[in-house]
Amino acid sequence: MTTRTAWITGASSGFGAATVERFVTGGWRVIASGRRAERLQRLVDRHGAEHVHAAAFDVRDEAAMRKAHADLPPAFAGIDLLVNNAGLALGTAPAQQADLAQWKQMIDTNVTALVSLTHLLLPALIERRGAIVNISSIAASYTYRGGNVYGASKAFVTQFSQNLRTDLHGTGVRVSSIEPGMAETEFTLVRTSGDQAASDKLYEGAHPITAGDIAETIWWIANLPAHLNINRVEVMPVSQSPAGLQVHRD
Image 1 (cartoon, helix red, strand yellow):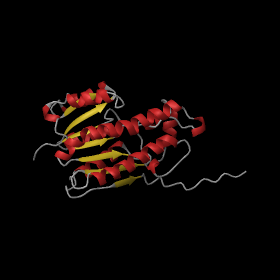
Image 2 (spheres, one colour):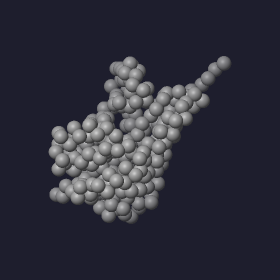
Image 3 (cartoon, one colour):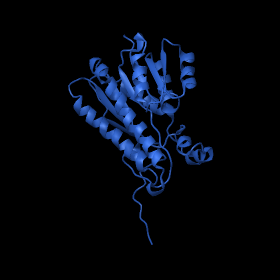
């Protein structure tokens, strides 16, 4: 069986790092991209340069993205799967108190960078009848205070995935959106500017989703028979459920 190649963004931590581990141990080659070069290098050191290629750049830097793509070693140049995992939430304030710079950073990362890399890789994915897995969020469907632009950006990811699916009809390319609920990674630390106490409080006793859980979900989707497409997967821990509507009373 020919070894397949996946490009996984946001691979230096969380869902991305766990997905790299899962695919390499499953026999795939992986292009691991992210900002933190030292963390990516650890993946290369652990698995070998023949299995993992590190591409260190900020996903918001389109020129760096294109250069990383152009510089791929020949063994990694044929991409069968794109996992658009890079993304972040910043801030917990309601919209009227939010930092506009944080809003723009979320849009640049969660939306603009995702569509840029997808557009860049589409010709190869079509040629190889590959697959795209986009990491969205339950925030795309369920609103909550402070979710403002983060939730909106993930709603874009979900809808973009479905529109890609429509446009790629007949090409053999599969497109899936995964929408996780509460998951314990570095997500809350990033959102709260490193507040470990806030992160610990959020996840305490909740038995949240783990990075490994999402990695297994991506692995399952990517290795289904070629005639099957998973359109959307919404995943929550058993301890979490939709909270319902808010009512403000005087």
